[in-house]
Picture 1 (spheres, rainbow, N blue to C red):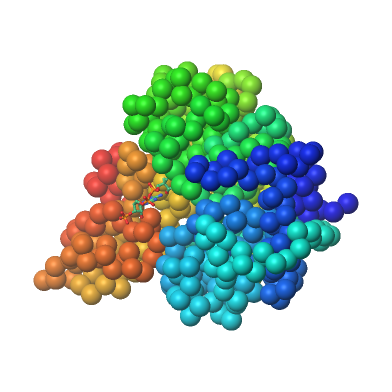
Picture 2: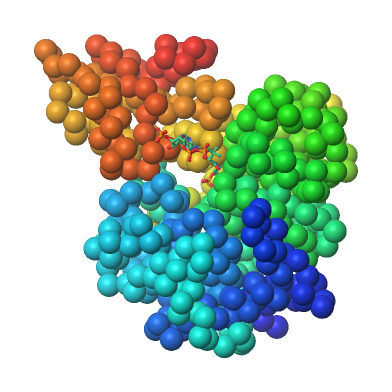
Length: 504
Ligand code: MLC
Ligand code: AMP
């Protein structure tokens, strides 16, 4: 049997392949056979460009359907797909290229000049709405490509996640990781060929790329392929959709639209939320407005999806449900002992979904696994001890010092190091404060050198030139001294209380 994920996906394509796959506003429908042929052409073109199985193909591109074909091409040819957030700037990209040494980089036409100077010897091709240079090369290629024979442990993708040390780590994901998770989700959420999934997520993170796309393609469903999340556009398309996936910000923004009514949501059988905590207020307001109950699930880049509230049965606000089929989850104390229900501890995971390790970081990989093979998520939670959500997992916070803003992770250390390097700054602390739109807003607290003024706008402006804008603090506060505990550790809880109005 071929463990290649593309082989599995293709086996589920609807028969009589001229079935609609991507519904794109203002553009012709893309059918399943067109997608398959486009992926074959790209696989042939990349092979001709020198790519071999195991080579990395790094992609920083807008959400054109050709990019989906490119992803499928990499899978079927055994190349390792490496998606990059479009917000990443030059220095961030240079790090990824140096670390992953891709054979090919695919980018937007407007960044070609920059990327060529940092691509580390990779061949650089553009992709745009018409296909770009990649499309030009693919056009003359055969529309057939024999999917390579893959082993379950062969790499399918590397997805970078930020690290507590400020250095990003590439999570190496295998064909087995992606395939097992995709099958578990199709089953848990009962996707069928009759579904139409509204897809407004970006396709450079696991939520939009793997969770959403695999559920749809593995069930022969259709997707509304929207370039980005725009609440008005989503409200317009929802009556023609049966499912939607989003980060909590999608749901708070929908609720802010007066045109988003029960009637608009009537045909949708499933609203899924994840990537960040869904506030119980949002859960309740959504139910009140639409009569529908959001299904919250929990996952991470290194593991794919871990737990989910049920399709049938109680979906409980503030919980992330039960482990998906084939996945084991445990909650342990600091000594590694399993916690009783109701006792908060570290969340650990084991199963075919758990990644193969961090790209070229064996030490870091070892640190994140227990001796008996469980992956430490860095999240903290408990099993609900009683009531209608008994035995569901409730996340209680994070052991790792991480902020989630609009579903995107920001590690304070990376930002603090940059702010500390500004002239006039003694030191800084970066925290997340509650934000009605992004859930948490990145905020900096800075100590100035005696007699030096801190220019908030200058710090924000300079950081925006250097790093992805979603990581840049929305505010910079100046303070005389950072509060520290007896061990000398900065008490971020006190800063959150002072600048975010939350209790410590
Ligand atoms: C954009 N901006 C953000 C931001 N997104 N700021 C903080 N946090 C964010 N998430 C800033 C931009 O830099 C810009 O700033 C301004 O907001 C407007 O930019 P935009 O591009 O117009 O924003 P918008 O399209 O409204 O994007 C917001 C969003 C988007 C919430 C729709 O961030 C999004 O799609 N988030 C989903 C991310 C996701 O897929 N996460 C899953 C990760 S996988 P300025 O100052 O320049 O104006 C994962 C595992 C799992 O976590 O379990 O799923
Ligand atoms: P990432 O590293 O981008 O994959 O983000 C994974 C992290 O997002 C997890 O470790 C959690 O901290 C968080 N996360 C994902 N889903 C949820 C959820 N439903 N509720 C709370 N946090 C979540």
